[in-house]
Image (cartoon, rainbow, N blue to C red; front, side, top):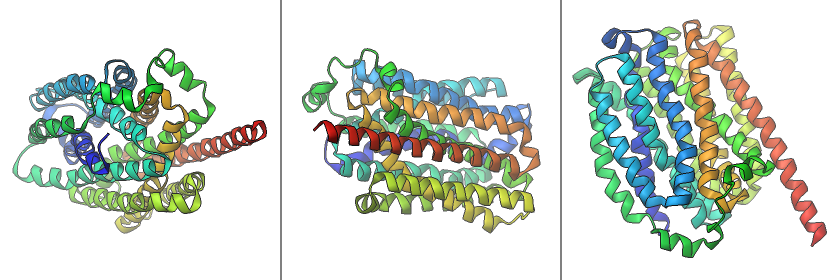
Length: 401
């Protein structure tokens, strides 16, 4: 792996793929009028993307371990470009949902391979910082996307957003391939990976340390994605506002994430990774409780919703890099599969949560608030379990030594 600055092209390509949802989010409430269908079918264009993205993590993780990062990404880039064009040309809601499935599958490769590359290239402290900067870059671009998407709706329709994604993907891909190590270089840097692929997913599923940190991160990440997917409807139905309000909320959330992620490495050095993870879990649950309070007190205040959302996003920025570093370090011999399974949990949970709350979005903030509270409470419980297990393993290793 190249020096830390080489993360930028990798992160930019991943972020461009994530634009596939964020850029056209402001247009989702209007899709039923333009293509026919219901709110549920419009939300299905988001859930289909998330579901395909989730399943793809298992496929791309195994493919990267077996065939190498460069060849796997080359095929994925081609699929991403073709599927993006199909989305832009979709004549009906059903066709758009199908194209979004293919697009989600193609976009997923970078989300698996990039974190694995980063984790294999740095020690614990460096990995937290590198993953934090990776998260900052990846969140900044999609975070600004709703603002651009809302502006696009003034001068063009939702199809333009997909053509923009196709163009940006074609530009970013060559930059990414310039910094990806060859298979020979990766084998030289990480010889332990050779021959370790058989039974990789079984190995991960039998590792309580990996599962605890991976599930803890995946649950809070899923809650965030499901909230973002549902937020345009909540803003329109419950707050009585439009796309510009959603774009503002998204931008504020991304800013909070970036600020906390930028400090995550330094705070992890001072307090330890496990304490940072636990603190982030506690703050995220507090943000979810604030959503519930706003919903049941019927305080339809945009500033209060935005403030709660900033706390939620900032908490993930605080705990996310440390959680990812712990999870990927648990089984370094199968780093590609480890990253893929973690993202499968998170994206699969997001897809299920998005569709589960979709029929109830007419009720406003409450269904989304309950989803966030449930996911963050479960995440906190899993995190505490993981910290306890890791502590016992370290104590046992000390006694043996």
